[in-house]
Amino acid sequence: MPAASTLSPSFPEQKPGVNPWFIAFAVMLATFMEVLDTSVANVALNHIAGNLSASTDEATWVLTSYLVSNAIVLPATGWLGRFFGRKRFLITCIAIFTISSALCGLASSLGMLIVARIIQGAGGGALQPIAQAVLLESFPREKRGSAMSVYAIGVVVAPILGPTVGGWLTDSYSWRWVFYINIPIGILAVILCSILLEDPAYLKNARPGRIDFVGFGLLALWIGCLQVMLDKGQDADWLYSDFIRILVCGAVIGFCAFVFWELRVEHPIVNLRVLKNRNLAIGSLLLFLVGAILYGTTAVLPLFLQNLISYTSFNAGLVMSPRGFGAILGSIISGRILANPKIDGRAWIGGGFAILALSMYMFGNLTVEIAPANIIWPIVISGFSVTCIFVPMTTYSMATISQENTGEATGLTNLLRNLGGSVGISAITTMVARTTQTHQALLVYRLSQYNPVFNEHIAKVQTTLTSQVGSVAAHDQAYALTYQTLLQQAALGAYVDQFRLLVIVCLLCCPLVFLFKKPARRPKELAAAH
Image (cartoon, rainbow, N blue to C red; front, side, top):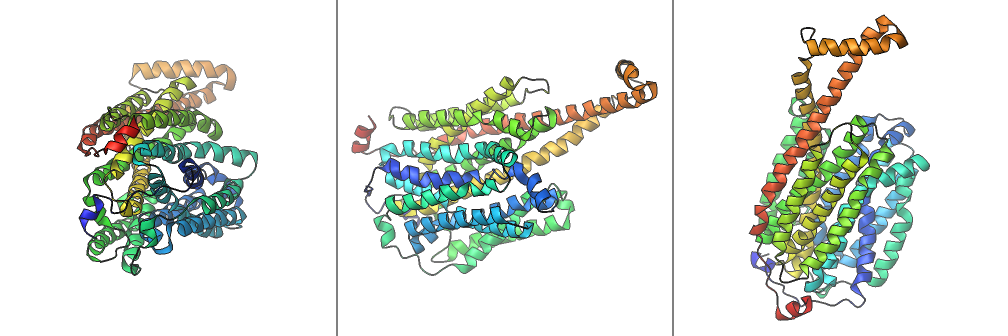
């Protein structure tokens, strides 16, 4: 397919037969359900492991298997939508996701649960890009900012609410209800999509060509190796493990072969040529970084709250939940900003990155003796800033993509955002673990009998404990408590370092947004925007 086809639409905009907001509700119902499932099972892993007689390490395959199959389907969504018809493909995927959710809840062994999760991930992989493509095509161009605001609420808020919802369901009922909750939602989504959706004209006459089996196999190889490597790397000590080295080789060789093949084959399973579009290429890079920051902080903040401040899983989820309020506010404001032709959306994106940097700086000043409000405010600000970035950036990325390439473009951007999330989680958790060891090594030399401050501290603690446990036990416990404090401070320093590193990453993204090409507004669009 020539690159020029990515620049201007070949088909006129098609107005849906029903109110586009009804369509938005139908597709986002399924999307919210699917995105929620990427994080809702995290807090239930211990319960799953205990109930199915598995170790916690084995239970993590419940997460990895879903992510791998989900990521493989994502970039192939455009081709599959053309081959089967988008409406039929979407409804089938929702049905597969719903049925496999029921199978997950009924699983009697870890193996059965993992197989069901693989099927669930394959069914859910197409829901995000199809929902984004449907929203972009259902709304007129001047209202696409509002459409992306709705999409942002689903893909940004759902991962935040996942741990809270999962913790509540697991504690109140059973881990199986984490999956059963999808069944009524999935049934409703199938009914609504069957009634409201229709395929656009360009898809009705589309000829996708033969199935690219080689491309699909190479796609599965490199994404599968990459996801498993990121998930298991820290536990296996990265390149010191033969298993991880094999995965690295598989990911690199598979990726290079995949790119070479897809650029040469006539009908690729993933049309990489759309990345010749400047806006899409820049947007994909920035979405990768936003995904890394969003998912990375969503993963480490609950660990910080639970390990250092002794919050329960449910309480940690509650503290994280206000991020959703900030995200909703940011999406509403961003939708209105994009509808105003006098405001440069690129400046709004840059401002969003600056505000996100501010929230990371606030996280970098946390201590172990803080009130919940000191955590909630930066969480709210970060949620607000992420949607201020996500909504206009998604709109700009798709602004110059032709209508017939929308499905392929949304599949790629969603894949890169999810891969960014996997890389962000893996990188930040690894750096927290490694930096904790570094801080511990820097602090431990202070615990010396030649240090008068240390001796004075031990004497005070020992005097306090002597009346309770006796002098001998007090001596041992004084050293144990002091060492525990050292470990706590080392871990705190590691978390603070990562948040301050993210400040730099956010600020470096600010100038990149001005590489976006501003989409030309047609006279009718300018009038409608007013």
